[in-house]
Length: 100
Image: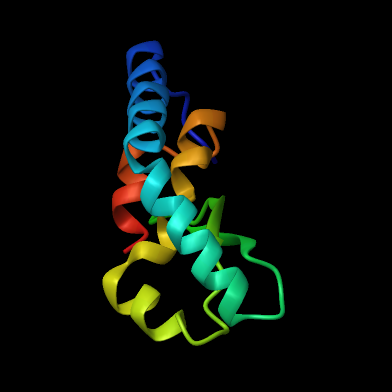
C-alpha cells in the first residue's frame, strides 16, 4: 500500500530532479555516448525495485552489458537517469538514495 506524499515533498523531489538533471547533463551525455559505443543493445533500461514496504518502484538506469558495465556498476553512475524518475514522480529522493 502506497502512502500519500505531502505536497512539499513532491515539490522538493521534482526540484531536486530538475536541478540534478541540469547539473549532470554533460556527465549523462558522455556516459550515454560511451555506453552506445561499447554496447550493441539499448542505452537505457527501465527497471523495478521494491521499497522496504514492498511497493514496486520503476526507475531508469544505463544498461551495463558492455565494456563500461563494470565501471558504471562500481561507481553507481548507472543510476543517473533515475533523476528523470524524480521529475515524473515515480520515485522520491529517499528511493533515489536507496538505489545504490
